[in-house]
Length: 361
Image 1 (cartoon, rainbow, N blue to C red):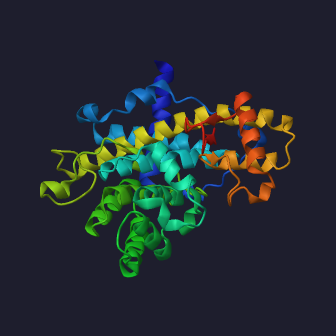
Image 2 (cartoon, rainbow, N blue to C red):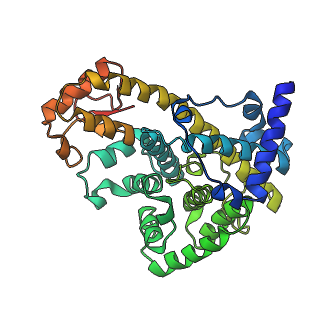
């Protein structure tokens, strides 16, 4: 119990620094030593898992509890992001896939993660429109995970994102939105997060766009090179306030009225999604280390580039296509390479099909 108490005091200090003095984080120089890069991910403290409530048990928590939990969870996630692992691209894209699946379900669509993968991976690279509306949702979340953080909230990028979310092209609205987000980024963490949802609803863009904007703002605040999709994968949001005829916030659960309760709901969601991202990081770390361990055994020409693609992508198709041109491998050679990697336990076949098979960590 003494250890848990110390952990809480340290996390409370970290949470306070993140929320009340947020600019200090992005200004603090980060020194990454080789020992830190090679160290395994630290497990989430048990007290933190207990402190993060699900949507049903949130009522018994106060705002300070949620600020502590969210600050500690984001602080732990921040330490992992700064390790800049070779396989971090696959991790972020896997999180983007989860966010896209939740977004599609909220929109009343039937596509799950497997169908979303198919929509994008089985389409020729550059054939933007043929991925369909669900595939565009995945492209929107992939955009968050892959583009440099400093480019995410520009008017040009926001215009493209809004189209991918199914909104009509409107460069003027995207430019106005970019201006509002710049103003929000100068405020405190809680105000920034809740403001992202409020602004998205004000423009009629809805909760999914609000989550995308909030994740981008957090990444910019913390100085990450790439954003980590978090809030889009949270399935526990209540019905939107707009549908209930109340002032729209996009974050309030049924019956939640006060600003404090709305902030508490959002912080709890951020803490939950951060813990899920940390758990996925730990799982993919083991899988990536296995792939890197067997990589020297691969003798096929182009195998090294395929390994790098597996580390940076959610999944790959076992056919040459545009993304495999640089490997110089035939489709048959790629299939044989992937089959060998599966036999070695380094990758998994994700589609369950006999043809058009898909592989990833």
